[in-house]
Amino acid sequence: MSDDHIPGFDTLAVHAGAQPDPATGARTTPIYQTTSFVFDDVDHAASLFGLQAFGNIYTRIMNPTQAVLEERVAALEGGTAALAVSSGHAAQHLIFHAMLEPGDEFVASRQLYGGSINQFTHSFKQYGWNVAWADFNDPAAIEAAITDKTKAIFCESIANPGGIVMDLDAISAVAKKHGLPLIVDNTMATPYLCRPIEHGADLVVHSLTKFMGGHGNSMGGIIVDAGSFDWSASGKYPMLSEPRPEYQGIKIHETFGNFAFAIACRVLGLRDLGPAISPMNAFLILTGIETLPLRMQKHSDNAKEVAAFLASHEAVSWVSYSGLPGDKSYNTAQKYCPKGSGAVFTFGLKGGYDAGVKLVESLQLFSHLANIGDTRSLVIHPASTTHRQLTDEQKTAAGAGPDVVRLSVGIEDASDIIADLKQALS
Ligand SMILES: *Cc1c(COP(=O)(O)O)cnc(C)c1O
Image (tube, rainbow, N blue to C red; front, side, top):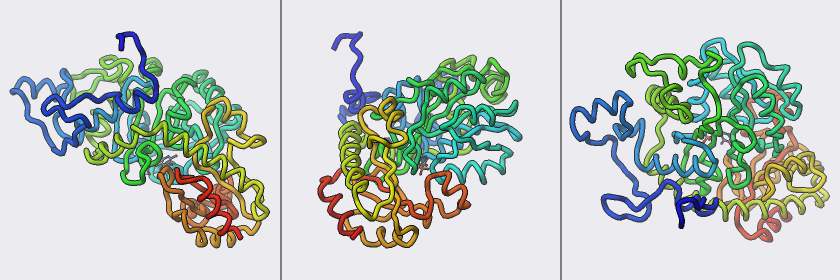
């Protein structure tokens, strides 16, 4: 291929960041199962510790298997750099750790994964980081929640579990108007279906545990830096704009430019808080990403068939899948996720809470568990599980009322998935 040829998404999913191992010729990326790396000499060690040279020191901060995963996901999202960590929640923690000081605020969508609602509401409060919730279907509501303490705006591209597709252009316009970074959790869509950076996101965060790894075998998370936000202009992000005493007084944004945020999360957040991804998990997730385009297309195609079947079933009161014409998110889905609406959606049972519990217990091909994004079809009744801790009002706002069942449609034969639902509904 010529030097100016830009590889397509499917090629990047297989190749980005990886080369045959220079030491052994191994074709797949090796699992560098080591805690630490030998320095060339004392000067080399000093330059690594001082951030004058980039290289491996200790697997809490960087590891070659992890580095391939980071480069691959940055390429798929169209970002400048990325940092892989131990879970999606660890990634969220590191993002806000680099931005917020006690008393600071951020505005987050009410339509969010239940675990994120818990993290933002309870654990973050202990750091003095305050979340203001808003209905992100209404840009005016986001603006109304912004105060002079607001440092960031957070939403999911496709909301888990409600399946609402956010109008990212409208949301990023609000963020830009107020000089705030927009953080988009792209876990449900993956960059195969939606690329938030093309719609103004400054940071993209993932739970790699879900569709990116895709096989239900490894926890992971990642932060992708779009390189688009000016962390120095407002003086509101001192971790990035002020001199760092432990690194000879360098200013992270001034020194590292358009990948400064990813660096800050690595050399401050990951260094001090410690949620490193294991090389084994980085390897398994990398292997999963090689088939991401094939899997996401099949997941989406299956989900659309299953959603259409449910919409016509007499025991079902409603189906919320943005791939179905007439859905409230159909138009935003066509714009932001034209290849498909993903695998996860919710529907309501006329029989309410008890019918939800009965259905989950009657399904056979589906596994009843608290995950999404496995090759296997998964089911959960959020009101009795993932969203149990929330108040009734929060449950309904998050799309997890008592009658709601959430599916993560797998890549089995659609006819088998539908047959299982048919027998369980009857
Ligand atoms: C699962 C999930 C998370 C949290 O990720 P973990 O890897 O479980 O820590 C965050 N956001 C969304 C949308 C998720 O589905």
